[in-house]
Length: 173
Image: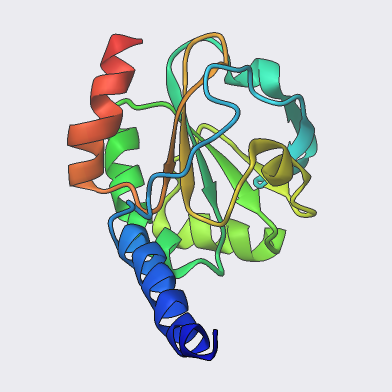
C-alpha cells in the first residue's frame, strides 16, 4: 500500500496533463450561446447619441443585421471599429450595445472614430449584456429580420471572420 502512495502524484499529474492537452485544442472564440435560434431579449434603453430617445427590440427587426457589443475601455473594440465602419459603408446594418461604459466617452469615441451603428444603446448597468450572455467585449450577434439570434461571435470581427463566417450566414438569411 505504501508503494501505491508513491504513484499518486504521477497519476494526478497525468490526469491534469490530459485536461490541459484537451484545453489547448479548443477554439477560444467558439462560445456556445443558449440564445441561438431564440428571439433577442426584451429591452427598452436610451441610445448613445440621444438619451431622450429610447429603443426596444422591435427597432432591431426588418432586415438581417449585426448586433455589436462594444465599449471605449475595450482595446479589441478599437481594433475592430475601422472594419465595422467599412461594413456599414457597404450597407451592412449594424446596431450597437455600449456595454458598461461612460456615455460621454462613447459619444466622443463615435464622433472621433466614426459611427457604424444605426443606433447604439446605452447598457450602463450591463443588464442587456447579462440577458445576452455576454462574456466581454467585443461580441457580435447575427440577427435575422425577425430579431432572432442566428450566430454569436466572441472577439474581433475582421476581414477573415466576415468572409469565412458571418457573411455566409447573413447571405442565407
